[in-house]
Amino acid sequence: MRTAMTNSSTAWLCIVLAFIPGLIAVIYIALGVGISAWQWLLASRWFTIDIIGPRGLPSCSRYFLLRSLSPRLALVFGFRLRTLVGNMNRFNRKTFALAAVIGCSFGFVHLFVIRVIPPTCGVVLDAITGKPVPNVNVLLQVSTYEGWGVHTEVRHRTSTNRLGLFFLRGTFQWDPLFILRGTWVTVNEDRDGMTGGEQSSAATQVLYNPMSNRRGWPVGNKAYFPLTVTFRRGGCDRVWDATCEYKIFRISTSIPLIPVLNNTDGCRQIANSSVQGRCIQLNTYRGAFVHVDTYEDVQRSKELCRQLEAAGLSKICLDQLASYVANPAYDHSIRSQVGEPIPDGMFPESIAGLPVMNNKHCGPRLEFSGRMMCASGYGSQMKQLVAVYVEEWPGSAKSIEATDWRPQYTDHAESRVNAEIWPGGGRILHYQGPMYNSFFWYSGEKHVEVFFYHSIPQRDQFVSYYLEQFPSTLPAS
Image 1 (cartoon, rainbow, N blue to C red):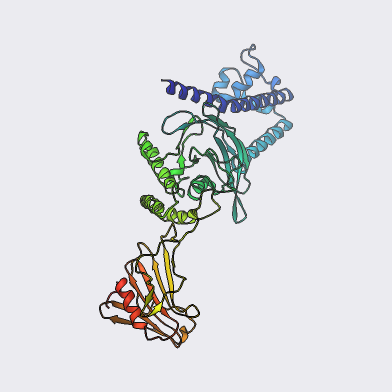
Image 2 (cartoon, helix red, strand yellow):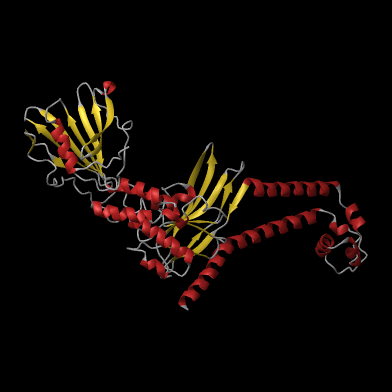
């Protein structure tokens, strides 16, 4: 009951606030027209009209009757139109013509040169609880054409009071060459509207600053998502619909603001299916950026991004997640890059009599892609003869043809790559150059390469050992 009474009071308050300026303008115009008409009457010969009707009718009343009634009805009241027209001198006719020209000019200016942007009044409510949201920025923004570009500016700004109410006064827009592109209201953005992007400003903030923690990027109330409110049909067509809402009326409009939640369960409490869907999309997108400290966290975040495939946001979510994970421009903790344990048997102490060097290592693992490089050398402390690389790409198992693998070693111009079948090891690719030899293959999610700086008798033993540890998954043909 209290909510209904609040909405009713809001409606009446908005109507009164919106129409008071218009009422004052109408009264002002009416007084001006009335005074001008009266002065024109006094300067004319209306009081010399030949009267055959009742003498008690005031002259000004006869005039208005004459102008409003047909000639036949006017004769009933005792007016003679021919006498009236005949008594108009040349000065009065010029005055009337001049007034008509001025009136038409003002009409042309108001229709084609000046655009009227009406006032906007409403209440901002929490989409789940229905309670008013105080202290939220509300901006009236206008975009105009400037040459080949578009200029956006904040025309008026205000904030909601403790009852969630706001009022944006109307304005006039000089539009001599149809430069006005559009007007809209943005809720819960920074007071200066620095995001830009016209109607997509709210979407831009959510997509590229979902946690509201990008350094140097001003934001509004972090407890709620920003929203663009457009009053033009089709204004949300090219915008993420979860951040844009179309309203028919500017007066007494109710704006549901989506709160930031830890999960989407709270969105199920919203009765309106459209608002509920917006709530789920926004909180799913933001949820993908909440925990990104480890590789496992990022994998769960990727899964949240994939849930937005139906909304066409999966790719941009994954792209922004990759940028967010290790980007110092965002105010979040970034884990220091540390090495990973070397799996057993990957780099034994010696192979075919060649000892392992002290440069063996694994990692660090990249949080977003999960890529991890393990490498080691074999030879003496003074000269490295063999390099072994085992690169892990989770979820990227694939095959490759000999023509596709062309490493850019210094002797690649005179090299060739052939596919070879090794007994018990499968198919591998063999790079042969004047200086270097290398063997490459895929083993599931791992890329394995055994590189020889010089021709050594232990070559086949090295290749056989790593084929046994990481069997090739390249197809036989």
